[in-house]
Image (cartoon, rainbow over all chains, first blue to last red; front, side):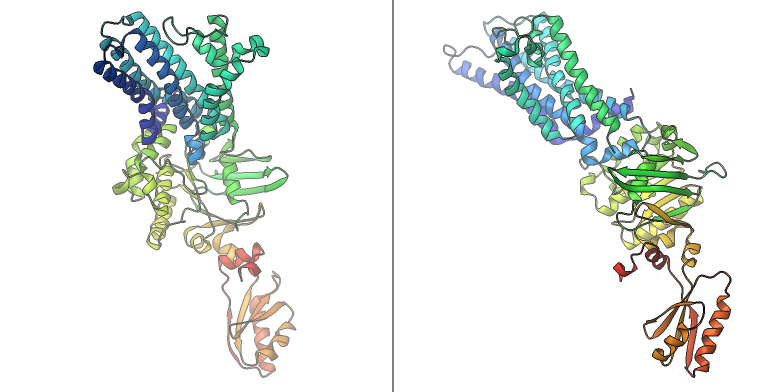
Length: 256
Length: 318
């Protein structure tokens, strides 16, 4: 893996002002705003409104970050997957003689290098507010905070890789965003309700992601479609491999 | 100083064929671009120029034939061959939200580490240093062309493939570009220049190939190609109407036409016939018929006229 190629991918992303702002809004902005609003309500009427932090605040905000962060991840992944093709620069990169596989592979660490600090910032806000604004509520422990961080990286990083692979395959950022957000927030929940699909519903990735959520985080009340952690890991790996494999194949074979 | 191994062509194709579905875009092309020359690649729109460039760069997959770049077989040694090739295909494209310098960094990252060090020199060579830190989205077409050339120079190229590089350049820019090509060739590099600006190709290039409908119609020295047109004589004389049948009856004359108050006499390309004798005969016929002859001179055929003649587009152009 070429560090220079990775750094070039990072440069393309971090210089897109719109992308930077939306990513920050969806990761840091939303959770900060929610904590701020709830804390103001709490301060104005402590009897009617609980403190913004504590376990309740932590659980609610981490679910919120996983949803908003997923959208940010899809925006970033699809930008990384289509930037060269949509501008026409892909042709010039191929004409350098550099392997197309290497050009594709560099997008993965490049986009992660942009995304991980952004989502980490959002999570730091959650952790700090959950502890700092807990009042008399119980606070999440260090172990939960660490495991929650791992899970949020998994949940949102997964979407980034999926968006990267799919957008590299179809070459359209808008379509990728529409398909993935539509599937994640509409398609998958609907499919999960169709009992006729039986165990096949385990292949729906939102269920696999939720299965791996640490206790105390995310959707614990919802019925679990995925039977075991092993199945969840296999489902996630299969989706990532399929998306990245298809994206790499298209990058290697498309006319430049 | 750059330079290719002696005798190795910068580009060599044999029977190269590219199809798009059932349409043949490049039809069994044999092309040889000698090293260290400025080579013009001419053809009307849709002739297959860009498709051939894309094919030899490995951007699209050929249906048949073989080719070599800088002596290396393609696509087997694609990576090694393209390492010393810089190319602009169609119009130069960039990330508009990045500066000129950042765009060069993107391409340099795909090349060897030394390419990073060449960025300042490449920008200076095309005169873009003062604007290098502005976003490319604000660049004019001419500036993008210059940046495209700078991007090519990152490869320290033995071969530059430039597709319509003079688009968007003002007259001064064209003059600078012409001088830059001459300097690059003096350094031992090969410049393969695809253009529809025939006059510029004639002024810039030593050799030329003409392509139409996917086939190479002719290639060689620019002057030789212009000379290869059928010899034409311009005659200014009195009584043009009377002179035409007289001249048409002379063996070796193919066609006589009026042109701007004179007659253009197109001679057959017969290597056994001496054009001097023929000119003398034309003059004798006119004088014997008491037609006043004011001047007889060979008509210089430009590359453009030869190009139009070869590509059968003379009528369209007129």
